[in-house]
Length: 78
Image 1 (cartoon, rainbow, N blue to C red):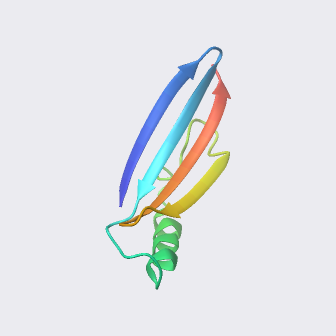
Image 2 (spheres, helix red, strand yellow):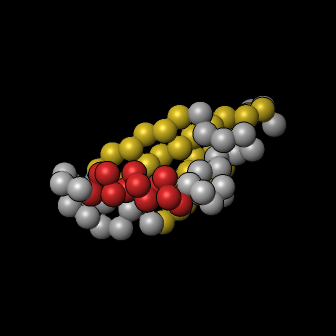
């Protein structure tokens, strides 16, 4: 799994985005539940799902044709 973080300051807010990508896997079958289990298992590491200072406000997960991608976002005042 890979984890990328972006932070963008917009006016008086800061927007955070965390992108988690699974290892390459085909769509369907057991790949989705496996990625969810991996998120749950690694979620014990508090740093994995941190998105800003308070945690994520939205969560989206999809398969891009080669891997599972989870996108977490939050917005905070500066």
